[in-house]
Image (cartoon, rainbow, N blue to C red; front, side):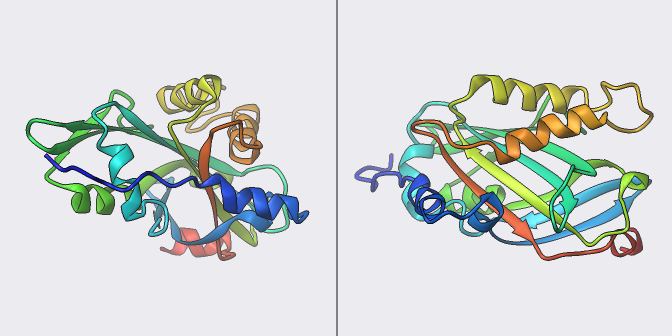
Amino acid sequence: MTADRPPAPSWRSALALTLALGAGVAGAAEPLQASVSERAGRLVATFDLPTAFPAEIERQLGNGLTNVVALVASVVPERGGSPAAAGARTLEILFDVWEETYAVTVRDARTPRGRRAVLPDFAALRTFLSTQRDLDLGPAGELPPGPLVLEVRLDLNPVSREDLERTREFIANPASSGRPGGGSRSVLAAMASILLREPEEGEEFRLYRSSPFAAADARGR
């Protein structure tokens, strides 16, 4: 069993400093390497989060309790405005102290009941968490021309149980509006409110923002 691991970091300090300097949420976002593409009439996002899981977080993710990573992704106009598409994913992580492996349950719109992976060590877990593939964002026809950006919020063990439940509800029923193939504007707005909300006491999260792209670029991929 691994011992004497360094303490987990606080992710709030950099964001708090940015907000103290008067920057908005977009200004606090880190650069995001991402692509949004069309697949069978649906938009899917693929992105990498290399800074999200530093080595120091191994102790927290290996504490023998269930840790939750909640991801909310939203396609929005570059200059701001209502989201045109959104998706969510949660990853529940449990370290087996006897086998010294990590069990991860991934829930998203495609697999709301979850799919499970068992990873042999922290290095494999870190790669698994940092590399997010094919996150469903809804129907491709919903996108305006652009320029657009993909914004991603990552929460570690969200303090707000309400927001976590809303995220899980969105995953389980993204078409709650009855609109064929996707959620309503009110649902998208709710997801955007999670993406942009201010941190609660003790909450750890990161914000990411991609380079601009056009709807035609997504459909051409």
